[in-house]
Length: 317
Image (cartoon, rainbow, N blue to C red; front, side, top):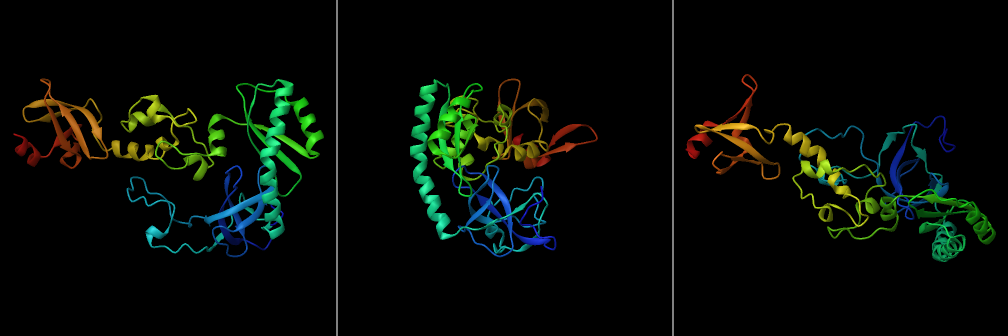
């Protein structure tokens, strides 16, 4: 659908990361002039026109991740010595334009809506009990740009809430939307502190909940105790996915566990590859254990064997 704010002659604009403070959606939006972090704007969300906060300029064009790069400095360009001032960029067709800057009247309306949400949630909970529906209400949100209230809920199965909607319409006299979400989405909406002591990643830095698997924990040699690698939502920690690709890339240049390596006059078995310490652990058939730096091992493509450097061999013997 063509963006109503996109002009035919406009092919460049400033692109910003905009976050919705109510349900933590993050998206890219374009605007014709420079905006700074913290600027409130009104933009088109998947639910309708709503308030958003500019958090940062979009990443620069041409700066891409290089496989195997260990110099990761985070989202800020400042650590790279690059100015964080917005710059004109080509606007992709899937990036919508900000509708307008939020006015003082709209900010006041947003504050009023926020104050009404807790009361709306109580009313809705009473109606849920009245209709004996098996659902857990999470939060409510009044849209800024139109007469509409959204209720987010979790449920183990599909819920027939048609009668509930009729009751809510009679109370609020506006459009009602009930949206079923998962337990990870519930944590993203409510927020809280994770096991690391920081805000939930899903709540503070991302709105895209990528699949997380137990294989990611195995590749990083983490404990497979579900209590240690699960978040408050009961699902695997989102941060397990952050370094997974890096571990895969690094392990591709290391001998796999179970590989036999000749050390001295014996064959030793690789029992562990530690990417962080840059060491591998090898074990002899008699039970002895030796730690070998990855810098002392090379792969001989001609023979298909992993070779330990002569210098390390001499010191070992």
